[in-house]
Image (cartoon, rainbow, N blue to C red):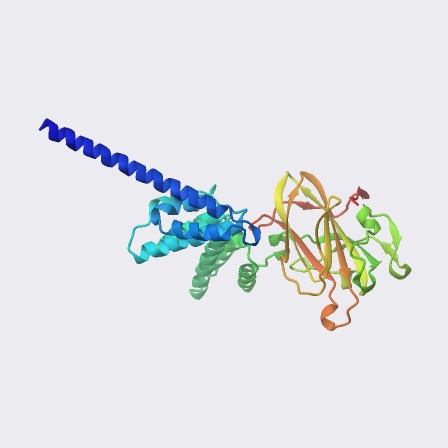
Length: 391
């Protein structure tokens, strides 16, 4: 009996060791495969090896889901796309083969806002495959989430609630739901829909403030831009912004800084209306922003003309395309606002095309976080007389 007992203990110990070794080997495999995928570079560098690693990773099943999600990196969308596809493939196969997903661990990951935003969205989608109650249980808490997709879905639920209330004739409940939706809405289509519904209920929405558009500027023009060839020329405003100065511009015109505040709902500054229609010309727009603290933000612009952007005298963006279309948030420029005063200078170049569709001379600009939420800043309506340039 003692021999059998000893033998049983030895066998159990052996099995435990084998299980531990198998688990360690699997964990090492996942780690190695993830490292291969995350080594993918730009222009397809490392793709063949990553493709083989991806296939091997998806064969490991649900146990690999959490390590995959933990490897998501919002700053590296190329590798994150590979990993997201792997997570989707594993979850889809598990459902098809009726294998359990680690739902408790996925829910914990989803609720951890310190995790990757895209990883949390992937966890949400995995949970959706097996649990239809997930939206009702989790979306109410994502109205102000830093993941844009989760946030959008949460906003949609509040819009749906408002629509239900409106059908019932409950104006108070509808307005409350719409205001709640608006507090989290970042996408233009959703905000437009909410604003329209609120307007129908007698509630006005300040769209420019909601999105963080800069409405007050100082403008100066016209500087010469024959045949659209002066994009690289450094005119005086690029050297220093002196609001009291005047310069000789296109055709000997007297160029002086003029204060301008746009009333457009989406912050568009129509330079034809503000300065007079001029072809083959360059205008500068200056705005001073006061920030309460150092903060990473995005400077987002829309412009149908060639444009350069300077922050505190340093060029941070340039695009020499003209009349190729425009839209809100056309160009997204990640920057750091320093605590205190920050000066932005825009160089907006109009060419000499005569077609009707090539007459616009305008721009819009806003400050927001990476999700699209307006950041708290103050726009100076009276700027300092002179600030240093960077050229």
